[in-house]
Length: 426
Image (cartoon, rainbow, N blue to C red; front, top):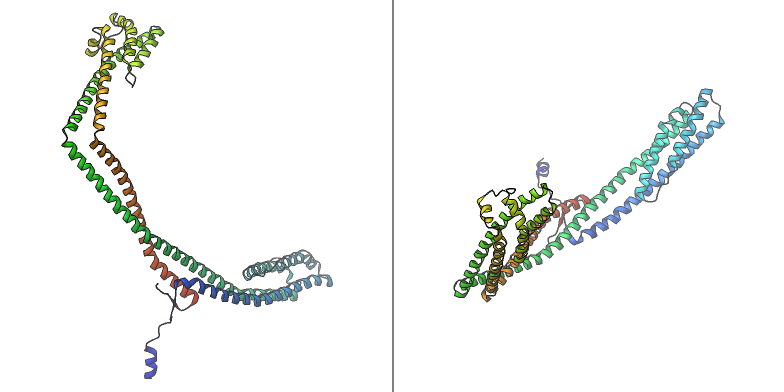
């Protein structure tokens, strides 16, 4: 009694763990596949012999049924049933039996199931009307079809097992291929990531050097009297140019506003030539590019007497002080505009020359070159850092996935081969 209790509660042995190298997985799968395929083909051959024999018996029985029709006389009602149903039944079953049965085991099974379906359909369709006419013959045919079905049913789990194995093999080889790809990718990343980190260190060093150069140039420029003077000249030139441009814009806008009123009146008065001349001068004065002083003086001087008379007659009303001030001496307007344009041109030339002198300063040029290189370094450094984070993310993702994939492979191997399989660590 004590021994029985001890045996019942005693320590059970753990299942044997089979260890396999990762690289050996395809080979062992291939070896088992060959054995499984041989078993499957052997089982298919056994089923083939039985199914072919059953098919021949069924075909002979159906043909005998047709001969029975010619050898016996039936009641008129039964004769009509025979005439209608027997040819349909014979055609349905013989057509199903005539389906080719391929050599390939899977295709053979599929063809057998289709052939069996056709036979069962013929028996359930036109065959049911023949049971009373040919009771013994139909009983024999039904029995043979049942045998046909039994043979197919016996072969069904063999086919199902083979298909299940193939699916498991497919999943294992897919997982193995994925693991191989991850191994190669991780090996590649183990070289690529340190390389990019070195590039980032180098670019960071260059960035700091260029930044130091810019700061050094700024200190030297602040301490350089000549550069400070040149900078002051540039600022004064820009302010002068801005002030002259503002005055020119104001005077031009006032003139254009008055000429547009004159243009509208000229259109209403059917003086189209005057309207066209006014429009031409308006476009010239209000163009985005500052026109030449000579062109302004000539064109405005030519049109001014015409619309000055319109102002004097009261056709064109001067609405504000700016307009009244400008047209207090209309004959001076072309000269005023021409002088402003000339002053604008001189101020622009002075500003351009001052900026050119400032830009040609060696320290300033060194600073600008450093700034340009710094922008390029910043752009490249940003891209390298983005790429590095992307690669680190991929590496982490694969390293997290790899253990799960390894466990999945072990479970699939254990399910396929039986036992408890373990993939050896490299």
